[in-house]
Length: 332
Ligand SMILES: [Zn+2]
Image 1 (cartoon, protein in one colour):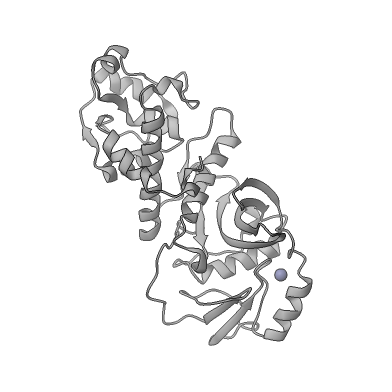
Image 2: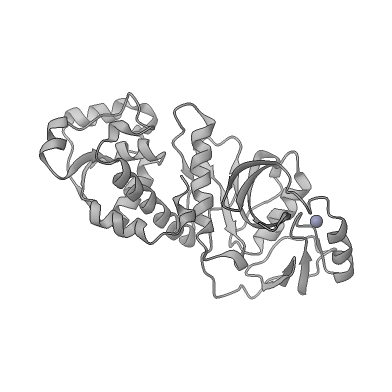
């Protein structure tokens, strides 16, 4: 499947796109990349493809499109099950096996804005999470703003395979909302939570988006829970705790990357990436005893690096990181 690519901004459409523009509902916008629509239905030099904003069926014919939108079976509610609902936004879980045609058409549409060469037809092994917004004055009038996909059985504990906010809805922090949902879903899947992260490698834009998301996630954790990690709901028995005496005596908190990962549901490697991006870490060398303790933790040992214990100086950086964020990003 595709590397996560939130595509927060885009300026250079690929020259060899088969579809130049799409009409999605009442929105007309430019495509970015080539998709793999069947050539007998969508010719190689299609200027305008009409795509149903509820089910993503497509047509080059405006009349056929108009006719379909009047009878589309998804026009009042998306397929699948609602798993998140807040402030007019909702996320719907759609099983690719149950809704194959929907998942294929969504994937074909998404490919117009994703720069990778993936086969999209293995939809049965993926779950799709649609982000929708609803008109408060008209509850049955909803818009699909983007989605992310997730492999049903991921040996690498990937909580997200591919993410896209459709171009007209970008720059509204919605990618961040979906990333938050992807982590939240990991928590729901297993008692005590499942540590996971997006499928790697990340695209350049995916990396930038995720770095910001991870930094804010960690900043929020450190601000809200950092003073006493034992109070966090994600604390587990296996977590090594810093000596209490050091916490009381010093204004600085000593904690491990693993502590933060366990508390936030993030992989150690992602925690390290974020902390480096925040510029608030000072690597130190762990003692042999500490190294043994970390190695005994089989699930995470593979992600640990030699400089595992890091002193984190946080408050000002954290406040700066999360103070500018909109309400949507507070979803955890
Ligand atoms: Zn439709």
